[in-house]
Image 1 (cartoon, rainbow, N blue to C red):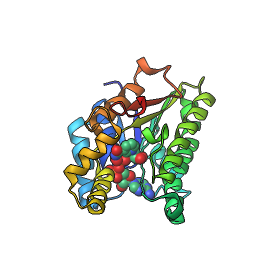
Image 2 (cartoon, helix red, strand yellow):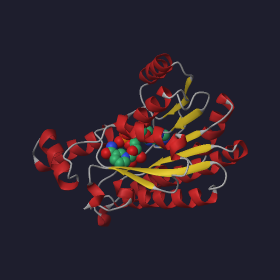
Image 3 (cartoon, helix red, strand yellow):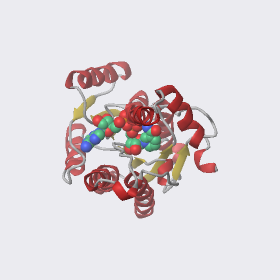
Length: 261
Ligand code: NAD
């Protein structure tokens, strides 16, 4: 129970990786602020289940982090609701797949706003109170695409490379304030974000989701298996631990060998 009495805000935690991270931090005793979109009844069920399973306080905030005011207001409300924000996990993200020459400007703007600007705005809002308390953990969920590129993902790859850069800058600035800032760089994780891509590929290639899933892994990951949200949660717990107190400014890959190639 390394995080008993601490509060973690996990953006985009109604689904996928964010939900896995929220559960893992709750299992270590952290109170949790959930955020993201979805069916209100299903989110309330998630909130109650995490609270009762791990005996922690859990609240939910529906802030839209694509809006410039969203991340800062969410951080402020979390500080007010729980009295502190000790662990900030910037996880919310979206994807759009198209070649550069036909990539829609509105998709570019949306991806940069959520996948990159919201990370900056969240860190900017969270750091002052973390500094005053002399302890903080910021974990930015980047991607293998924060380190290497793939075709047809110009906004996503640009945003995720930006997240890795912003992580390094923030880490240096708060190096002597008891705060670490790191990026987790997953390869393929089977979440709704990837399931949508698999369905689109199946339609485009006249195949099925299983065949596309095998092809996706074979293209990029020497270890032909998906990483799980639980494994990413465990990495986030490690980054919050005492053992990781000098791990900072680092992109940590969890990608089945993707970027080793
Ligand atoms: P997901 O679609 O399952 O979850 C995304 C979450 O973000 C959801 O909770 C959604 O409601 C929330 N969200 C979307 N728009 C939002 C907005 N405007 N404001 C607030 N919340 C919003 O996706 P995922 O695969 O779990 O992705 C989570 C993160 O992991 C993303 O940053 C993604 O880029 C990154 N990532 C995913 C993979 C993968 O293979 N799935 C790999 C590398 C990195």
